[in-house]
Length: 242
Image 1 (tube, rainbow, N blue to C red):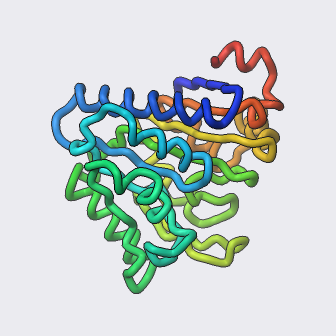
Image 2 (cartoon, rainbow, N blue to C red):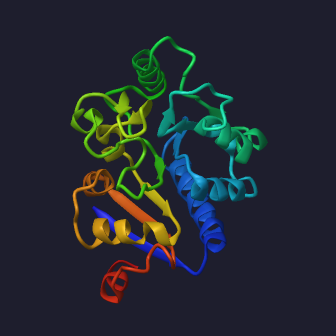
């Protein structure tokens, strides 16, 4: 694993520079191989600000296929829908192909199966390797919809699953560790003082939260943090991984 930690003075600067880095990574992927390039999106307020900056990036969006790393089991137009957030933030303003998790299916399991089949048809399920995955982080250490103590953490064969989250009392759809570990690059976007303790536990403490498991199995991981989220990290750690 290659681990990089970038710390910025505020959330706006983080969003600006993260968007530039994301566009650069997608351009590199386009140069490395023909065909579609895959970008997996996270929900959350911090990623949303970054997405609004992506609209201004010089990029051949027509080659980019956008996917969701996770989704709530709600209608696509629901206020809590990650798909709706992504559309409003930037997808409506670019020419990328957006593959929405099909929450209109009768069951979340059918929806997860369909999404995985979409990936297989586009990229081949055995050879699929996401070009770039954007992730957020919860104060409980979850990322995507891989929550502590849930069944999806034990899934080793599937790329996407339906995951019941007891604390939320709802179904979520989520990429699995298998998909995330096979990504060419993983980016975490985290801001705010409320995330500082869990960030330090994951990065320096080695606590086995789901986000830590994602990080340990991925090839190339970059954390974008504002000063507040990085407040509990040591100067030595930042110097080593900055």
